[in-house]
Length: 88
Image (cartoon, rainbow, N blue to C red):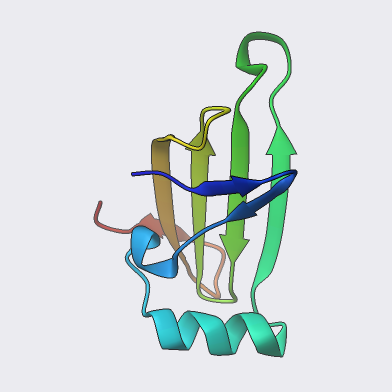
């Protein structure tokens, strides 16, 4: 699995994260999904961590510098503070 890198901007297909594409687009456009990009340092230099979070779930992709997804973490976020890993 790979993401596309356009300069400093990662382009991610919602289907790669096992999310409904139309629903994901609606949530992104409405501002209900927060996003973050972190660049690795030290032992993780050259890697990217992309995080997408809604009120109900969080998906984090750890990628190599060329966009290859090395690890995907999915969590269902509970309103009471308990979190459960989603099936991978």
